Length: 359
Image (cartoon, rainbow, N blue to C red):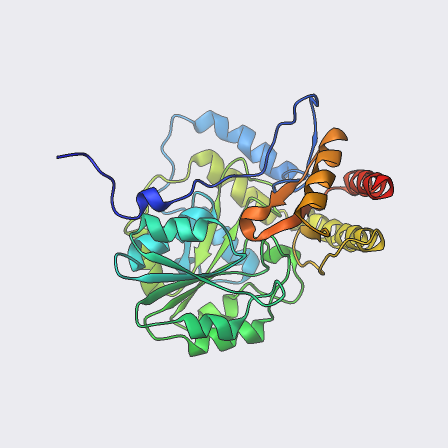
């Protein structure tokens, strides 16, 4: 009898992250992974250094202090918060606990590439739903729901599009889905939006909505891998039964708590991103490059075709700049560009301007 993996595992295409290294450039400008160009909060870095003194101690199993800080800052119930190794782990818990063989998991065509991976890892079938002009189509999602649907993963704002649907549309979706379905609102970029709570109000009022957030983006802690989810108590109770007790270290917990409490630093990052995101998009449009209004910390630059995008990417690499090709997300003609600091944004525009002029 041969050793074989569970059904669906070998159908998983390996996730490919943004490139970090560039041959010939010791310190490239990395704008390929939507990282915070200002790094983490100084308070988070100090907390991380202090945590070295207790590396021999096991961390808490209930994450009470971090959950309390999250609840305090966002006005939530700490008993309905779960923490994970990045928000990815919380998304994984949901698939592990609520989807399996014979079940379906819906995601939109330009959503996070991990969604179909998580579905297949649980033995479920991923179902891709079309978007409309790079924006989530609620009616298309509802049309795709069947009695086999168990989860809907929704990225809002979208990645790599940067577009988003308003809370009213999210509410309409939550109200109309079948009763056995959980709507999962992946809010990795919520902090970069305006007048959107990431679905917290929906979680408070409904039993079929869970939202997730991350410390990797606005808080600049991508290298530590910390995330959290907020949901109905019954669902959080289920997820905690599969969460490993020591999934987050003392260092992760300390840095995350310090980061979320440093609201002044967070506001600075939000304001700078909003300002430079508008400027970057306007400059790209002025160069004749299609670019939707973004609500995140990146823009999706859409060129005439795949060939032009590839040539521009090569020109940027020559200039020591890394951006993200997003053919795997359905945009072979696109480059996703993280909004860097002022100098980084200016450098990108200058390099693309030279490319367009030469072309």
